[in-house]
Image (cartoon, rainbow, N blue to C red; front, side, top):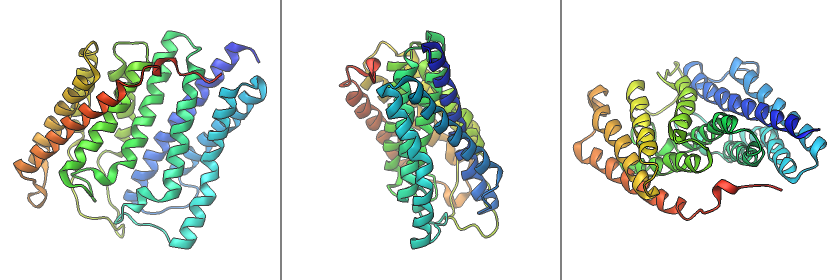
Length: 315
């Protein structure tokens, strides 16, 4: 297979995996709104068909190219559907998790699926690097947005306003660090000064499916509140715009500023829309903001140590 055909194949795989992440977000919303459903629910069908198509295309790409980058991609793509029997075995041994426990997020099978998806996305980057600048911007944003949303899914139990908030309002620091860490990496890889906004726009496109959480009768989940969608969008985009505007500044400065804007907008105003029993104190909001600044600063310092990210290859 010629190089242009392999590049187009890579684009299609990126689009199918992005669709799989979108379907997974839809499935998570579906579980809360309608409870557990059959295998044939619309989110499941979209998720499984996207994954199967990505696996077949990845295997075909390796068969045609015999390149190591395609071999690595095919192996990690195969891990995604292979995680399904692991998930079924886990449920048979330990039972089905409900939304009252963070194990609904952190069970080993679920983490295996997330890891496989993220690894597949990473191994698509050297394939995409052969593409045109315009396609690198478009599909690179989709890759980093998918990784961004998958990481936020894993961090759900740490969200201060969520159902579990395991670290209290200090959990905002970890969320900010990894959320903006992914976007800082996207800025290093995507050949555009608007990389942060492009990535955030795709990430919000996926996240919007889970906005306005609904809980069906009989679904067990701890009582909690969420900030209104417009505030989530505004806080996220404010941080992303800051990262792009400060593109020439050191990464620890950009990370700190993004953490400040995101947390300041989100936790500075979210309480205004909460029911009285969920309103948090000023001191808790300050903890969230300070933790986010520190988290953004630390992740920026760590990323600054990565000197060759833009040259990732897989030959």
